[in-house]
Picture 1 (spheres, rainbow, N blue to C red):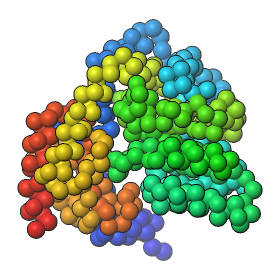
Picture 2: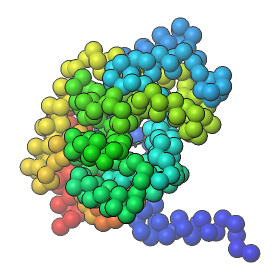
Picture 3: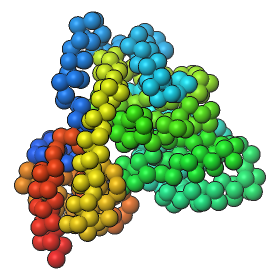
Length: 380
Ligand SMILES: Cc1ncc(COP(=O)(O)O)c(C=O)c1O
């Protein structure tokens, strides 16, 4: 009998050989990697909000599922305020964006529907689709015509249900934006739904920081996911949808039903973060200036087109080379991480540089200058 653990060790060795071995490391150095775009996570505003919430008796733990004793006034207050802020008919608060995607995509598309998803959607969307009852197909990245073709082909082949178009408004590893107006038109024309993951746009993009889908949110056939652990600096995710779809999730989505409700304290922190986003547009404006500056610099000094957003992918290609460059940057005090397959497509290992309010323009200049040197040495 082989050792019980040997098969895992063999697989881990294989990952190591492919340059895909992952280990946990703490945050260290200057932040060019977090999703804390508005520098809210450790801010005095959220800290004070959490202390005030504790002082008014908001509990740390919910103690049960939302459907049992875990439904707290703080969850309901957050959902009502967020629905007004995002102009959604209703909102539901989940413990994480992962759980929210899992719930939406495993529950709402029905047998006989088709789920057409962008090739680059997040792992949590894949998990939801794999758990669901509808057939799922991958569509080339950011290609509205390809969505149209795929759905038309499915209809011609006898598809009778409703199509679901699943995208991110701002892609997490590429920083580019989805053609949302075209996709919304397609969803209408094909009698379907559009699911928009706003994880990296919420709080940063769109009028008032309401995200890139802010003009579509509230439509009957649009479902929007706002994660709360990125620009909002807390954790969890808000799903905005029609009343009937939210009721359906409450009744049928196992990640919602069979999980302890999110911490009421976190719900209070998200309320506070939404207040900051609404009341302090200057944070967003300052970030947009830094982002424009960083995009220009990356284009000039590194020869990369720049994504136009706060997520700047520097594609290296080879896994080990990407790791080597990231490690050298970390050793120099810049927290830059390499992202490798399967998180990104094979052969596109990259540095994912995130611009946040945790850095200023001179620091971005120092980082890009150093990166240009290290890249020249590692990729002669
Ligand atoms: C596009 C996208 N959707 C969903 C998630 C999951 O959100 P959370 O971290 O809140 O689980 C992430 C997180 O990385 C993401 O990038």
